[in-house]
Length: 495
Picture: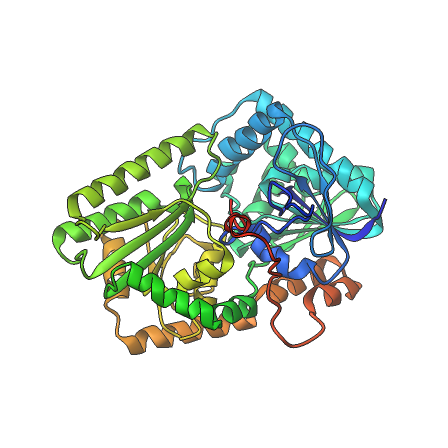
């Protein structure tokens, strides 16, 4: 069995659910998210990715993808219901996102969370060679660092939380708060998106566990666990190069024509999630149509809302509400051949997404709460023409970096409407100045800068960092484009 000096541990494997006819797997890359962040890095060093393959039953044996070994962890129907849909996404997810929806608590969910985290830890312990670096990702696997340290104390363990970490008054609601904190403290380095999250964690460790803690270090047993903020980013050069391709620019022109060549195109790209502020955005747009500040013939909204966690009741209800509201708005304000909202729920491949970014005069990224939001960064990277206005929620982690965006409070409907109008009617010189500043920031703080920052803190030898953050030449690396059928290509990026 091949072992690896770097092991990424995440809830999902980053691959399509089905193999191609030739037996190959492909990267599954949705807009933003974990795979988009890590994909550019892992192609440059021997690595193993441990995660769930997406089905139930025995773990499948999978081929390597771009040189990265895929090791599946089995989940059965009970695990999927109680660990993933239950504790992870009906208890932790809403709690970590300011309790936008009320978190639910069930003892069997916690039992499943423990069981699945133990399985992930055991699989990781099996594939990691002595002294290797293990990078555990996100809220599904809070317990893995502690469990893994008990199994393999020789490993260098990092944990990174991609979502917000809540203030103490919210986290204290969790019946198993101490166990979750101890699990995270099994890591040598605990990383967050923002400094406030690290501060919240330090406060909780002191309050709940009575451990000495600062916003940078926590003492536990005979170890020191370091904590800090490491804002995740994207492969800026890859997205810029993709958006600059002649065929992508041509596709953007055709898309605008297909939309009726309006004066303004507003774009939103989200997972279907109650944290993304989709309903608030639709309401603001509807009120602008009512007031006449926006007219259908001049302006069109393209809302991409890729279904997510469709077996979770809250998400089913949300999708029904969103689709009902889109239908109402189109029925009231649309004309034959001129819908007020183009509503799309299918995933897009990277080239099509880049074309959408290029056609959008305004990119509306207005989550109620978000750890980072890489869609906003992808939009900025794709605007190689230095045009396009980014309307951005103050409560997305991205807002701390892209301060030149048109920032809004998505909870404030009037403020959201005024922000949208400001972005729509901004002077071209102002739009260009803001976009250039944001693009310059992203070129300095891209995915390799994020990985170098985090892994330098975790792996002090520096060898792994050099392999991960260097491509071997100065040219941007584009994702591989395997020669598949058109039907296969349509499935390439999505969940």
